[in-house]
View 1 (cartoon, helix red, strand yellow):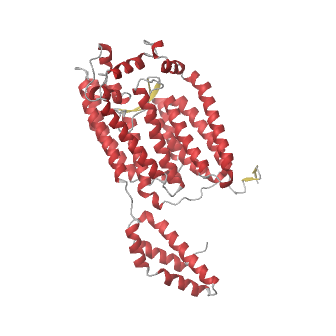
View 2: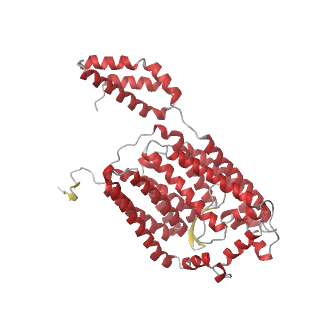
Amino acid sequence: MNVSDAFHRYAEKVCEQIRWKKAHPAVAQEIEDHLTDQKNAYLAAGDSESIAEEKALLQMGDPVSVGAALDQTHKPAPQWGIIGLVLLLFVLGGIIQVLLLKTIPVGNDALATRSAQVLFVFLPLSLATFVGMYFLDFSFFGKHPYVLPLGLLMVDLAAHLFGVFYGGKRWLILGSFALSPLALSLLFPLAFCGLFYRLRSQGRRGYLISGVLAVVFCLFLSYCHTFSGVLTFVFSAGILMLIAAKKEWFGKKNQTILLLLFLLAVVCLIVLLMFYAPFRYRYGWERLYTIFVPSGDPMGSGYLSTQLKTILSHCVLLGEGAALSETQAFLLTDASMLRSDYLLAYLTYHYGWVASGIVVLLLAVFLGLGFRKALKQKSIFGQMVSLTILCTFTAEILLYIPANLGIWLIAPIALPFLSYGATALLINMALAGVLLSVFRTGEVYRDTAPHPIFSDSKFIQWADGKLTITFK
C-alpha cells in the first residue's frame, strides 16, 4: 500500500501528542490506513489524486486534536487485580518462609544461613526480577526467538562442564548461588513459543517442524533436566499447538490436517515417554506402582507417600493437627524439603485444610483471570506468550498438589510464588513479569510477518514440495 508523504507527516503529528511511545507504530499504521481508504473512496468518486488526498486530510481533522484525544485512550493497561494476586502470593510465601524458621533444629547453622539467604537476598532479587520483566518489551522473544533457547543450551553446557554433581543432576554454582536444572526447565516452554511463532508462516510444514522441535526439546529436557520438566513442557507446548491449530494460526485451510498432526505428535510423545522414560528413570515404574498400592513398598518407593497420607489424616479443618509419631514429626521439621516440595502439606498440618485451601483458591483465581485476559489478546504472539506462561504455571500446580497429597507420581518443581528453590522463585517471578508485560502493552502490539525458513533467495528455494539449492 503506497502512503503519501502528507499522510506520513499527518500520522507523525498525531503521534507527537501521544505520550505512550510504544503505541506510536500501531496508531500511525491505523491513521495511514484510514487516510488511504478515504483517499481511495474519493478517487473512486472521480476526484483527482491531489484533491482526494486533501479531502481525506480535511475529513480526518486537526492532527493535534486527534492526537490529544488518542492520548487519553492509548495508555498502558496494568492489570492491577492480577498484579495484586501475584504480590499477595509472593508476600504469603515470604511469611511461610519465616514460619519455617522454627522447624530448623538448634545448631544447624548451615540450614539457618541458607534460610536467611532466601529471606534477605532471593526474595528482594525475585521481586526486582518481576519488576524488570514487567517493564520489558515482551516482543523481544518474538523478534529474537533463538536467544532464549541458545542461552539455556549454554547454561546447560556450562553446568555439564563445570557443575557440581548432586542429587542425580549437575548444578551450576555461582558464588553462593546454585542454579537448579529442575527450575531451568520452566523456561523451555517460553523458548519453544518464540520458535513456534516464527514458524507460523510455513503453514503445515511449519507446524510439522514445530512438532519435531517439541520432541527434540523433550529429549533434551529428559537428558539434562528432570521428568517433571518434560511433563511441564509437554503440557504447555501441547496446549499451545492445539490452540494454534484451532485458531488457524498456521493456515485457514489446514485446520483438520493440523489437528491430525497434533494428535500424531501426542501419540509420538506418549510412546517416547513410555519407552524412553523407564530407561532414563528406572524408578519411574516403582513410583507409578506406589500411586495405586502405596502400602506395597512402605519402606521403599512408597515410604514418603505413605507418611504424607498419614500426616494428612491427622489434619483438622482449622489449626494444628493431632499428634504424630516421631518419624512423621521429623518429616515436618525438614525445612529444606518443606520449603521446596511439601509446603502445602506443612500448611495443612500446622494451620488446617482451610489454610491450604485458601492458597489453592488464590492460585486458581490467578489462573482464571490470567486465561481470561490471555484469550482476549488481539495479537497472535501476545496470546502465544501469555498462554504458554499460564500453562507452565498450571502444570507446576498440577504436579505440586498431588505430591503434597501423598500421590507421589514425580517430584514437583515448585508452587508458583510460594515455594523456594531460589532458582524456581526467580524464574516464576520472571515469567509472571513477562505475562503482565503482555497484558500491559499487548493492546498495541502488531504481529509482523516472520522471515520464512526457506527464503526466496537464489541460493535456497522451496517450491511445489521441492527444495532447490543453487550453488552458482
